[in-house]
Amino acid sequence: MDTDPVYREVQRFRQWWIWTLLTSIALLMLVLGPVSVIGLALVGAIAAFVYSIRLTTEVRNDGIYVKMWPLHQTFRRISWSEIERYEAKTYNPIREFGGWGIRWAPGKIAYNVSGNRGVWIQCKNGRTILIGSQRAEDLIRAIDERYASY
Image 1 (tube, rainbow, N blue to C red):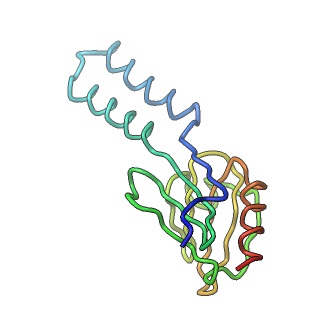
Image 2 (image 1 turned 180 degrees about the vertical axis):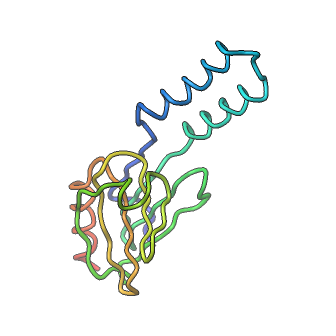
């Protein structure tokens, strides 16, 4: 098994409103005082956690790999034999999945951290997987290249 990826993308949460919200909460705690050390520590811990989250997507010879670190310690693999069809799409993360992150809806799962573009994968077992991507067309090209040789 060849583990070198032919495509790799690493994404982080970068929505301005997340950082504005966390900063506003911390500032309100300081201005409206008395300052709760526990409250500030909690806001700081949440900010550090959100900052540490990263979605890594890789296309390898044996499938597509997805890892949302630190929630996943290892990659989740979607083997070529599981895939029925796939396509790049624009989607609405809030309407279709209730937001960003690892999101579940009946019969489907989404891995996304930013934006509204991604690759929809229809599996043979009926399950749908969305992988958010800032470079959806590059991801599709890499999948096309490897899936065709499968």
